[in-house]
Length: 378
Image (cartoon, rainbow, N blue to C red; front, top):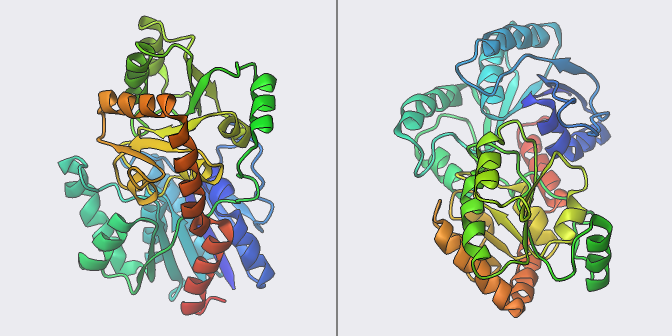
């Protein structure tokens, strides 16, 4: 079988889908990749499991004319290769790929679309439902299988008359639990010394690219409140800084530079989680966030916004706390509870270690493999 993986950017495939592509190779399949090459931004990703890689000028914005060019390039790639299936990811990758397959010369190409978070969700702007919902519903007619990774998306696609031949739910894209595992107290101390942090610091981490969706401002406002009671606090914020301007201005104007630490794109996330006490998320919405799964796998309790994706992973009062979106005051209160009750950190961390097991990469590969078998692709 010959399969084309499509996503808006190369890093999406490189970060999340290589283990299953390697499994397809083991089963005798040939897998190509088509996406915009963003290697300069996110370096060090190994995509050598792919047979060929095509640079396609995708844009994340649905309004960009680049996606018209991407459609033409992608349709040409599909027409010139004898693909048995196209497996598409990310919103624009999913839209453009399905239109390209629909209008390609070859018929009977199986189409799988993995939804990493519909743009329409509980609490999303009305525009999202007006614009994105009908597009996805229309394209479901040309989809053999919609794969969802959280409960909200699954229930919507399953019950809202989406016309895909099959709708299913899998437990995310998988995390390598051998790379993300709890550190001992001695290892944590050594990591803090290596990175120049005090053993007395209370360190929080939110690995996420700076953007409106990731909503780092919620955490910065919570940090201000925490500092009124506790000064030995650090907030680590590794992630691309293309849209950091608003947050950096807030950090500067509120004298948070000693406490809030943007770190840029990093390849040492396991170490940074390992030296931290707790993990955070302030996201407005998620599919099924890898950063929280990695945190759970390392035994970190989580304080997070109560939104789709996050609340699939965090059980309030069990492995962390769920906080109403943009309620920085309650976010700060929950974090202070953990600072002042270290036994809760251990309790929540142990619960997270139990809950995280089903999100292993082995489990994710097995679940997707079953879908491919049902579609008679392997």
